[in-house]
Image 1 (cartoon, rainbow, N blue to C red):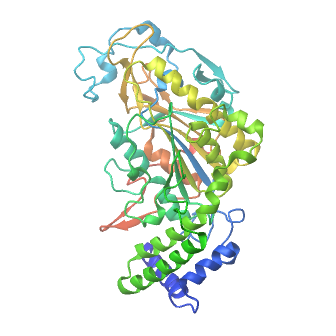
Image 2: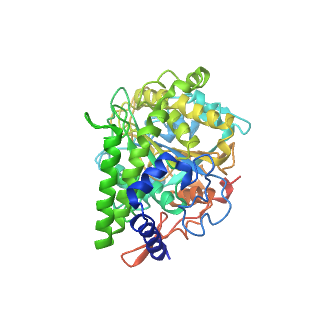
Image 3: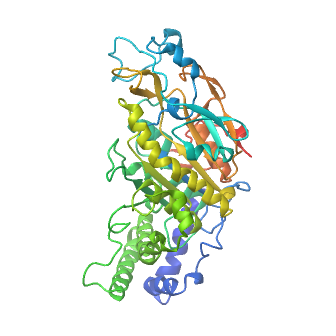
Length: 489
């Protein structure tokens, strides 16, 4: 079915562009002069935009768009969300073998003579109507817990960063699969004409990035058409490379160049029939439209001062997490389907108390501001926000242990993420871990379950959104995953 639809779309475009009397260049120019002539605008388009696959959404969606705040490096659930007061009595005692139960550990701590318990140094309090436990590290987020579903039992098989991030982003630990945003672009299509369907924002920390490397495959299209891959915005210069005209090139000259290039590509397509040529044509035209839409998007001068204050003092510094959270809200307003905001440097194997305090100081206020901002604009009800990393952290210490300093190794067996808006039940804590935050005791949520639940909120049956490649049907949740109905509003 997918291949038949792709062939039909290609034939339709070929008739429209290749055989129309005016040719592809005139058609493209006409769409630029009058965007409403050929497509819905961002304001009027919905999840049933023309670019969606036939039959999608499978049922009425609660969410139209997703903002994914990804904490690359794995933030410690023990110091932020998973309150374990009994561990104070276990300070510097060895993790019992009965708790670990032979589970594998990383090579970074496998050579340690012992695994001493490191209780969190941070204080916890209950917040909200349901008394959700939140660390003192997150005072702003604590103020919005009534809008969150805090999931304490997310788990994964991956124990190292690259396969773990690849796994949660693409459904496989091995590279090559389409990313989450690419799947949503392929299935649901775009809600706007002037911005990409899928945008990626990289956040700086102290003026740089650091931490674990993030590769383009994490927002790539895999075996889907390249038009579904994420567009990565930069924090300095043009938000998108080569968006501005080079010196000596006028808008008219660029338009003429694109028209001639489109004609050449159309001729080439007639010869070889490669659908990627059609993707190339559409991407050139999108880039041209973005010359006007992106500067308007990134210009914060129209934001009221009270909104800027809500996101914190870094909001006007391009590339900061605060600035990117505000940009994510502005993209949601303009019909961007999937916005991924990355921030690195959560990989805290040593000196964790100081480093996590810095990281939480960067993300806490903007995260809370994003939820409040969406809510006051009436957008939270159809915008799904997800927060979290690729795995969690161990209760035992890596390296030297003192009362005030410790490190934590990777821990995939259980960790915390939160979801908000877009069909998610607010103000709840879901799942339970043991006293050591080492094993799931109640209501495990595998990362495939998390992705299945996200897709359900968007009106997608995760088992039905597939693409046939190399003789088998692939999907984001591979051959696993169940919707966590307890999380649904």
